[in-house]
Amino acid sequence: MAERLRVLVVDDEEGIRLGVARVLEKFVASFPDIAAEISYEVEAAQTGEIAVERLREAPPDILLLDLKLPGIGGLDVLREACTLEPPVLTIMVTAYASVTAAVEATRGGTFDFLPKPFTPNEIKAVVRRATRDLILSRQAKKLAAEQRRTRFELIRVLVHELKAPLGAVEGYLASILDGVVSDEETMRRVVTRSIARIQGMRQLILDLLDVTRLEAGMKARVFAPVQLAEVVRECMDALRAQADAKNLTMEIAGPSHLALVAVRGELEIVLNNLLTNAIKYNREGGSVEVSLGRREDMFEIAVRDTGFGLSREEAAKLFNDFVRIKNAKTRGIEGSGLGLATVKRIAGLYHGDAWVASEPDKGSTFTVTLKADLPERNP
Image (cartoon, rainbow, N blue to C red; front, side):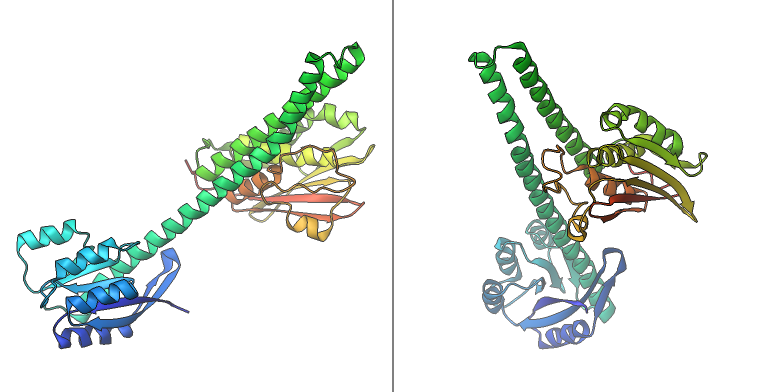
């Protein structure tokens, strides 16, 4: 269903008012590139005084305004329209105008001019231009508001997530300074805990930087052929100590020759996050398997673990920002809650997706798909 915009036509000629109304009330402007389809509801006013009253009571979306009006002139009505928040987008209609009046109207905020006499197609064209500008402006404001909310939420959660570990480290250091901790064994335990907390904070900050750079398009993207199996092996080697600490086995399944044109660092972020989770949330003596494959034009990476598993409700919200599953089995496991959200964002850059299939107490399989064709080279 088309969105409706309100148009106020201000002209002292009844024929103009009726003609514009007939044209616009049957007109539907379609904008496939911005996913908008607009129809129009037309109101009319024959004087500047009535127009000002309408503007104050219920501002329209678009104002078609005659420059020469009896009583309050078009420029006065324009000034009133521009004092509103947001200003009403105004198209000035005139049969004759001095250069001074045109300059003043332009400076006053007029979007466009429509000279009399005009044809129905000329009305449609100028209203279409105004509509596009209006819709884009509203979409930009909506996006800016969403970005402000997102930034606020990121900062709020970041403060919350950093407060606890900072407090813990401060407490540990105070206990040393006050002499509460003095023997070597306890001192070592306190320092070890402090280092673990600091490492967790550092990882949170790094994950947050990955998210914000991807969102802002600031992360440099250099594409080159990448052997998937090679990246998997390197990520496994980097995490080998963590896996050995839990007696976990890690294996790669699937073809060893699969090559994807990609940004290597982005694939490393994906695999590091998936493998880190598969290790952290696994059972003692369990296993992690990475399967590689290709189906038509999509590469597929699946990471299976023998860990705690997830309920359907937990799995449904797992790829959102700052989501960490907290229950009796995961209590005490540190994480930023940003890793899987970043994985999904990167998959989207390659026209793919990320999802999880899981069952409580039976493990999880995280799958990421990446389009085989070279993705758009975003800056």
